[in-house]
Structure formats: structure tokens, C-alpha cells
Image 1 (cartoon, rainbow, N blue to C red):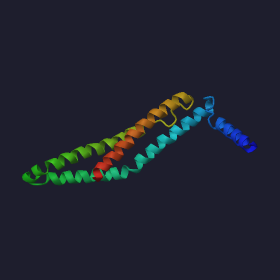
Image 2 (image 1 turned 180 degrees about the horizontal axis):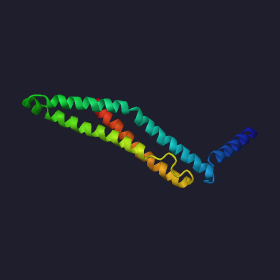
Image 3 (image 1 turned 90 degrees about the horizontal axis):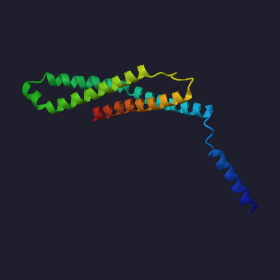
Image 4 (image 1 turned 180 degrees about the vertical axis):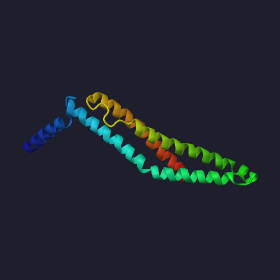
Length: 146
């Protein structure tokens, strides 16, 4: 019975310590801001790691479109649905590249460093933006691969 009370006391203390959400002080906010920055950076890294593939797919898509343009009229007409898909794919690939370039230019690493609440809001927004850019890159590459 004594062991049960010790174990119960230990569990209660453990949960009180683990569940303590803090007072929302500067250390908590700094930790949240740091975590958000790391998530933004991870999204950026994933997107950037695919940029070489994206460029390669843009080149390949352009090559295919050029090849279709050189076909005789009858063959070009027959390839029209395929050309339309390639045109759409190229737009998506170009958008993904432009979106990443724009995001990188606009992202401010040190934004609101002195105001943690503003920094958290900024990084939350940037996490969503870079997530959309990453998704545009990954989805356009998935389409190009198929």
C-alpha cells in the first residue's frame, strides 16, 4: 500500500510538472517563436531541395512543347490534348518557381525580433506561406513525374 501511495504521489507531481504551461512569459514566447522559425525553415529547405528537379522538369516540358510545335499540322492537331496538359504543367512549374523566389525575397529573418508577439504572428503567417509554396513545388513535380 505504501508503494502505491508513493507511485501515486510521483505520478501526480509528474503530471503537475509536465502539464504546467508556464505563465506565457518571455521564455515561453521565445520558445514558440524559435519553433515556428524552425518549421518555416524546414518548409523552405524541403522546397529548395526540389528546385533542381523543378528546373529540370521545366526544361523537359519546354523541350516536349518545342517538339510538338515542330510536328506536321496533322500530328500537331492529334497532339493538342497532350500539348494542353504540358502547357498547364509548365504554368504550374513556373508558378512554383516564382512563388519560391518571391517568398525568399520577402521573408525577413529578423522580423519583429524585439516584439515576440508580433514575431510569433509573422512566423505563423510565414509558415502558412512557405507551406503553400512547398505544396506548389511538390504537387507540380508530382504531376510532371506522372
